[in-house]
Length: 212
Image (cartoon, rainbow, N blue to C red; front, top):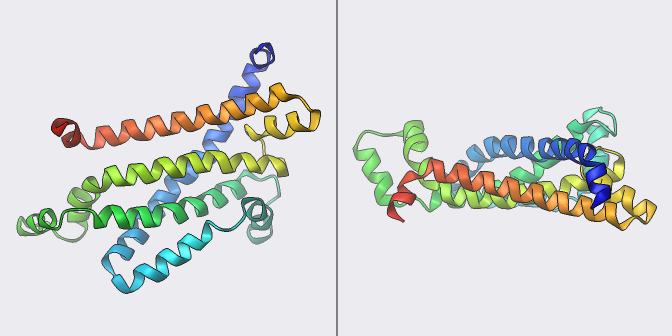
């Protein structure tokens, strides 16, 4: 405990870096997964191939991807952009199916009522389909957020600075306290992500609270 207090500034600094590397790809991945999931839900012939390809992306080992991306992108091995791109790929892999399922769960009668009221195309998607899909989307985002926090820590093996540093450094020194600090910090960060997503989902779905 005393070691953690003595290194609190270091822990908080790396926690901010970790949150950035896990959170930014979550937002970028969601923005890309939304149109992909919409296509998968609207075009039956595209659903299988699209979800199959995006699902395969998640099977790529994270460490291999972290090492391969600098060659593809022309960046340095320690450049954080490699982690952001890798985590965006994993986020897309997780969220594309979630978006398709979330939009598919919207009550057809509600969609038809919106069309009868004059809503169509993008307007209906933004004002009817997407808001009603928020609860399912939020559940998928929570899974993706926890996954991102976990996988980002692997980047410490190639020297990218974040909370995973305490895991690798503590293990190298056989210093269990530092390892546990890294583990607990990652868990706390994942819980914060989860809580924020739940709060945003509640704000965006006031009708759910009204029914409750």
